[in-house]
Length: 214
Image (cartoon, rainbow, N blue to C red; front, top):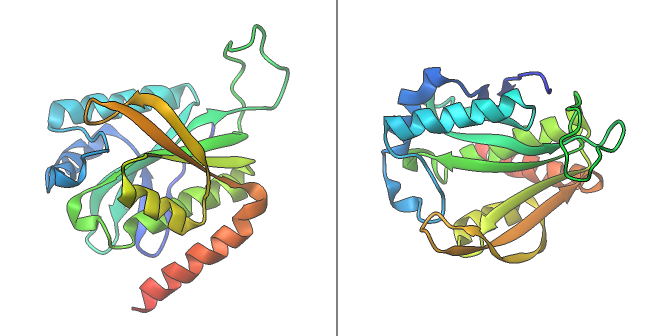
């Protein structure tokens, strides 16, 4: 499975998710939960422990790479994100279809998801640089063919942030899953291809440079 890594930028550091940061995550998730209408964020310590343990179990199978987001401005863990739904296209095709094949060392495609931030870190550029670090690792280290990003179709804030990265809207899958508000959720699917990454990288870098200068 992919090696554990720490990804560092100017504003944030993405650290491998562990149970050691549970209390920090609880504090971040408790700041103001009004912004989590369309995002499932653990409430309280018990839920957060289960959330981290489930992420680590998937990581052990080579299916996800979860991170805690540390905001360097405050040196606090302010949220979490992950590279997930890792698929490995190398080697022989597993049979029968749908069977789990041998996990490789380098994923071929991945999603970015389960991203959430405490209220104090929202709208600060933390999310943008976190996405930039994940995209850079996926495209430049793993050489993935595609990154997928998804959002509840009603979540205009998350969709605007994804579109600001330069991601392409692939479409809306109707009745895709159970929403965070316990309704049936339609999901907007976005993607960035390896061939599109240089232009996307330049676009995000320009926005990060502007934020850093300010």
